[in-house]
Length: 226
Image 1 (cartoon, rainbow, N blue to C red):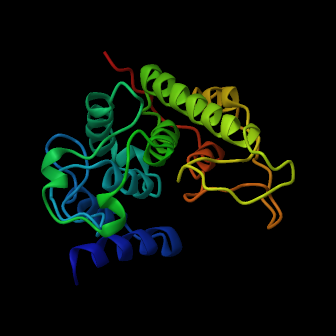
Image 2: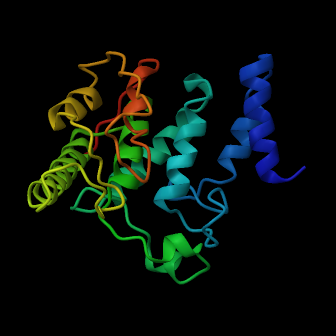
């Protein structure tokens, strides 16, 4: 059984059949680097074993499927990586070492800062209780700045009727208050999100799944960055 299959099989066995989570925990830990981030092929589109934001986002998703009481060491290492590697613009960038190795075509042209992976990482970190206030402030500022760019583009259109226009890959057109993102991350708002219908005005290349993080269990511990 391959390393990846061991992780996925362990998660399924634990969630569906109440099996011992240790096999999944061990498999997940094998993808975590000494600096706390995840890499080593967890994101198949990135060849470098170095930590990167996309693999780390996946690692945090897996972490949320495992008991917090036995994954504290993995979560705290991930918290340190998130704190130390978030850029001032609010995002987590691909390192030069990662860019120098094999990347899938869609990643070679990825531009930062972006709402993906910044909001995805922040949302998962908040759900795990390892998001620091500074982290959330930076992502909130990025979220607000991107919405302003989108609003300007929409208002500057010469056609008053709704049309399909070229937008930033991570620009979401759904009217969502930026402040609600910040309150949710801080744990002060945990209301159910509305169900998106096919006719929704959402136009987003990557689903805003960072918001889904706020519907799950309350974290068992909190993290405070120095």
